Every structure is written in C-alpha cells, then in structure tokens.
Image 1 (cartoon, rainbow, N blue to C red):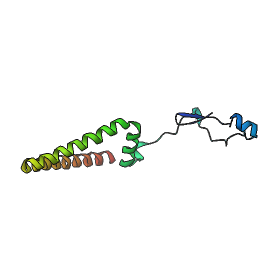
Image 2 (image 1 turned 180 degrees about the vertical axis):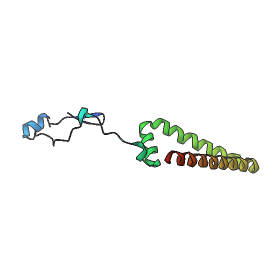
Image 3 (image 1 turned 90 degrees about the vertical axis):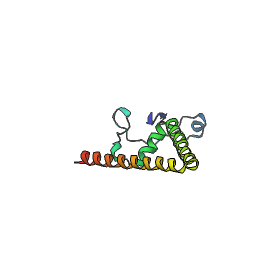
Image 4 (image 1 turned 135 degrees about the horizontal axis):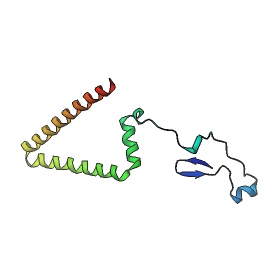
Length: 115
C-alpha cells in the first residue's frame, strides 16, 4: 500500500468490475521512502502567507475564531470613532504606535537572528 497523507491507497485496482473487465493492473510504482514517512518540510522556507494558510488548514476553527474576533474589534473601533471621534482617534493612534513599536522590535530581533 502506498501512503498519501492520511489516506491509504491500494497499489492494485481490485474492484470486481475491474477484474471482470480485465483492467486489474498494477498502479504505477511510486518511489517509496524509508518508513513511508513524508519528507520533512523546513518551515523557514515558507512565506508569511503560506504559513497563515498552513495554520488555517491545520486548525480551521482557530482561524475562524481569529477572523471573527478581528472583525468584532474593528467594528467596535468604528463605533467608538462614530460615538466620540476624539477617543476613537486616540485609540487609533495608540494602536498605530503599538504596531510601529512591535514592527521595530520584530525587525530588530530578525536582524539579530540573521547575523
């Protein structure tokens, strides 16, 4: 049996209909690795978009929860800005400052790791 992910696929077409029709031939031989383990993937080679897609596929409920919470926070921010523009503006400025500081720290740590 050849392994493809979690599903096992038979090397032969063994359906009775195929056998009666004389079509029960071997499937093309695949190169099998030792222990039938999938090749290791280096996650550092993936882009950020690919990492997000991989995480979403692995845990779709968590991805959905993050999208819902992000939309809720965004609507709260819009409602706050409409209710009191000064406080909404302060929240937006605070958020932008927080993102700028986080970006600087991230890039600084990335350069330290690259060196």
